[in-house]
Each structure stands twice: as structure tokens, then as C-alpha cells.
Image (cartoon, helix red, strand yellow):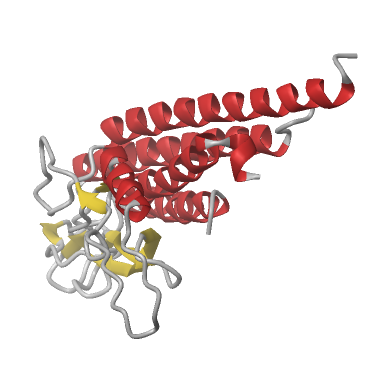
Length: 127
Length: 136
């Protein structure tokens, strides 16, 4: 299935995960000392690339080397105007990022459904 | 896990913010209460929020209401012997609810409620579109 949808499957998963993180930020917009976090696309991309060139382990006693295993993919946001109560959520910015993420999700969804209809056309012989 | 937890996260925020709105309503309604005893007078109530930890992952999810605390601001002492609730010295104690603070709280709570509702609506639309993926 992954070869059919290609990169769009991973993109959809990333967007869904980011939607959750941004929803958590917005939910805690009034929680004292809550620090806003986000997933960055480049962090996920780096991780994917690293796992692509992971060193093969052919024996149980081999130690797997994963250069990015310890790296946290979720990163704290640097606030423009932190609140007095230690909260770093900026609701309007979070909402804008949420909207942007939702549009990107829809784009990935469109690409994926395009792939499916291509396949369907091939299967039914363009009838 | 997955997109469904967006509903849990935003839902917990909706309930927390509506509790905050209810407390504001209660504070404003009891703003002009007086009592003959300083201990019996109404005190402003405020909710305390805390980020709820997601038991299945590293992402903090949703918001918990830790509890409701009463304001420690001292009641306002007033000399009003004509008041039926006045004590022997003719004093009444008025609630120290701050109307400005309550109104600001109300606006903040209603804005947060709106943004969380928008999160739920967007997530719902996206999920419905995902469900119809490949149909037609």
C-alpha cells in the first residue's frame, strides 16, 4: 500500500500528528507554565533520512547506530510575547499554524485520492 | 492516538473554559452580596488549570482542572446600620469581587472556547474527508 500512496501516506501521518500537538497547545492556552511545542518538518525529514542510511545489523550482538534516536522531535517554541504566568502559547499564531497544517493535510489527501483514482482508471480500462 | 485524540484534547479545553465561564457568572452574580460576618461573605472563585499528561505518549494532551480556589482578598467593611444584615456595630462586609478582573476573565475564556471549537470543527472536516478517501 505504501508504494501506491508514496510519500503522501507519511505526509498525512505527520500532519495528523502535528494537528494533535497544535490542538494541545491551544487547549493549554490558559494553563500557567505551559510551554508551547511544535513538530518541525525538517526534524521529521532528518529522522527519515537517517533511518534510510541506518547501519545494517546482521547479528544480535551488533549495536544499532541511530544517530538521531536521542533527538527530541518535538521542540519548544520561542515565544514572541511570553505571558507573566510562564505560558508561551500565542493563541492566534497557533490557530494560524493549525489552519496551515489543515490545508496541507487536505493537499496530501487530494494527492492520495488522485493516486487512487489513477489506479481505478487503470483497473477499469478508462470506462 | 491519531486524529481522534484531537477531539479529546480540544474537548477537555472546552469543558475547562466553560467551567471558567460559569465561575465568572457566579462571581458577577454574587458581586453585591453582603454579610454581617467577614467569614461568611462570598469570595471570588477561580479555576486552576494544569496540563494533563498523555498516558500513552510524550505529548502533553488536554487540560485538567486542578480545582477551584477562593480569592483571599479581604472583604470590604462598610458602615451601614440600616442594613438588615448589619452586626451589632452596624457594620456589613461586602464581597471583594473585582468586576474588571471578572470581565477580562470572561472575554479570555470565551475566546479560548471559540478557538478550541474551531479546532474541533476543522479536525472533524478533515477526518470526514479522510474517511471518504478513494470514493469517487
